[in-house]
Amino acid sequence: MTTAGAVGVPQEDDFEARRRAAARRTGFGLLLVALIFFFGFIASRVWLSSDVSMGVVGAAVVVFVIVAVGRHLRK
Amino acid sequence: MSSITQPIGGHGDAAGGHEHHPSGIMRWITTTNHKDIGTMYLWFSFTMFLVGGVFALTIRSELFEPGMQILRPERFNQLITLHGLIMIFGALMPGAVGFANWMIPMQIGAPDMAFARMNNLSFWLLPPAAIMLLLGLFVPGGAPETGWTLYPPLSIQQGMGMDLTIFAIHIMGASSIMGSINIITTILNLRAPGMTMMKMPLFCWSWLITAYLLIAVMPVLAGAVTMLLTDRHFGTSFFDAAGGGDPVLFQHVFWFFGHPEVYIIILPAFGLISEVIPTFSRKPLFGYASMVYALCAIAILSFLVWAHHMFTVGLPAAGILFYMYATMLIAIPTGVKVFNWLATMWKGSITLEAPMLFALGFLFLFTTGGFTGLILAIQPVDVQFQDTYYVVAHFHYVMVAGTLFAFFAATYYWLPKWTGHMYNETLAKWHFWGSFIFFNVAFFPMHFLGLAGMPRRIPDYAQQFTNWNQVSTVGAFGFGLSQLILLYVVVMCIRGGKPAPAKPWEGATSLEWTLPSPAPYHSFPTPPVVQ
Image (tube, rainbow over all chains, first blue to last red; front, side, top):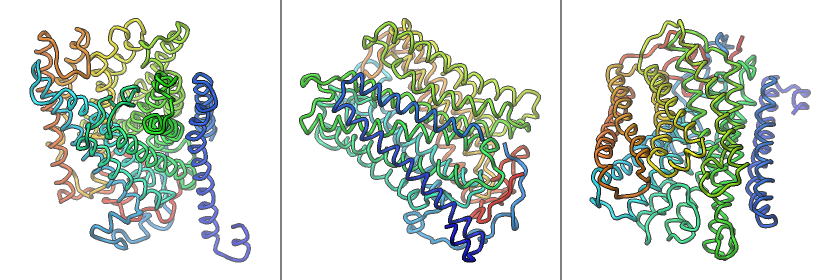
């Protein structure tokens, strides 16, 4: 994407390309989180006891929300 | 909040307004335009609101008198379940997503949502899911009789309608997750130059946080109902006590989803109200940063209080104390928000157009619902009120008077921008007063019924509860009929009326008001610069 800018593609296109790539990265990252929670919850219940399963998944979810939301507060 | 803008290259309608889009039915099926998709979400939400409302009125008709009138008990319970599921997953959540689709790109100066095709898919998953949910009424055994919580062991024993419900929840969950990914990505990556996070309109902030909540809890709910499905059909015993499973685990998991879900529904409403009140007070929002921090605090605390829905299942004393105090703690950030809304109005130049009336109605009624929530947070009290009509009154004050009134406020607020016409203010005010009065007639008596000990989810009741039930039923029908005014006002506004200027509300400041009314089909192809 940066090379496209270097070979003379207008700056606007380069900006758009970078923005699309950033959007794809964000989207895939969030999709991954959702999939991990879905399969992680079922797997944790298969392999762990109720209490431990709930604790692990609960902690993971809360940490995700704190980190995800919290990192935007500085901007 | 951002207010002064300087669009690059004209007024941001470089695509030329309304041309360049397909017409007819294919426009709606294949559209990737955020405004079209937002419109479809809102109409879908309203349709589901009417369907869920008809179920509610059927329930209230049955409860008009003691004894069995028009429904068999199992059908009554099925309607209770479907009313809850349809209102939450079919009406309130898609309604909030509809507002997000319409307004977030315009408020942050983006040309569209980040993943436009996925946006189309997110919407079109909903109608089949809704049909699947309703189909339960027509299969052997009928729809689930479990209530929207789907607790085992009853949910394991139900007929085919339960499977349809589980699949419907899966599909709606997938739609919500896709919608959330889209919203987060749009907000994080497509903001106009100069629009920092702390300059974003509060509606965008509220949706950003809501979307994170959805991504966190929807997969957990999907996992739980998947395990319910395997318990029903594949011989597992996750929740089946007969096979060594733990039915209470399902309750924990359900409410681990279910309580944040309450905030998933109410946070966008907070955002909407935070747009309306400053506009009609002609003052900037008081304490913007504290509003953002309060939203974050509410979101995080919402994960730490789920077991207050389960005070009667036999929790350890330490657990009860923790959940009781944590629940009360939520009143602090919520109180910050209510204080800030009041402070915004303080010495403002207030006018009472329909959006502001609904916002004030929201403020009054939601706070009432919040107070009864505090009462229910006290465990010794909750043990008495568990599964009574007091709880029904509480959550309808939060969900209906909270979210729905905010939706109405936002609909009237942005209707000129959406349609290009001003709505009929007189009828809109009739809609408000009809909704406000009949809502209270319908739901306030439920507090008395609950305090007197009337249990919820029963089709018959003892004689002494008759009077207030009759009042409540009359109120419910009045509230339902009042919504037809909204339908009429919206349809009339779409068909014509006084042309709306670009900024019909003097106090409005966010980016969408820099666009002409109706908003062009392609807005902000060139990002504006936010100063």
